[in-house]
Image (tube, rainbow, N blue to C red):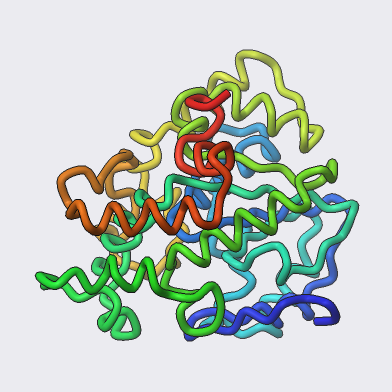
Length: 293
């Protein structure tokens, strides 16, 4: 844990990474929650296998290292026993992770307001009591959005996807983005040009495929295909109900906040974004390169 920031919340503990021995060809997907993590993991699984019908089984084959509910000894033994190229996921910002110059770190971002509304839907579907105070089902006073704006990037708050946690992810990823093994992707760009996302990742990971194979892989990673086959692509464990797995892929759309926030709430969000980000950085974090490049 030397020189790494501590991220310790009710669901996650980044000290668990101390039990993982990184390999030179590991791929670590790093993102705030509901930013396209599962989509990116699926793309990576498809590229590494070259098989559009691969059983991704993300919970076991590409596990979330930080989450407390899994026994860490069992998880580290599973990872160590893997003979294939490994990929893992984390919602810990890069300043809380062990950085190996030989491994690939793929950071994924999404418009913060889309993250917030997608996370709202997600935690209400899960029904975990730890979220109730932040995300009440009946919320006439706007508690959820107020906590989104006021929550801190670490500790208990960090697991609840506040804006400060998203900004910490972006700050730490951008600080390392000059390294050849740290790459930033945006959900909007993935939606706009999924084949281009596959091509870029194929180059980064060194896994080329023929045009016909790539076409099949891209189709497999389309939102409609993943939602239709939610039992295959959901990151939830095998025992989770099929409806919960399907609900994980709620809509994949953007702009959910339109008409759902007051002028005062939007002004407060704008003020915080402008206080912490330059105009160019804000434009990229909200819209990706497709709208800003």
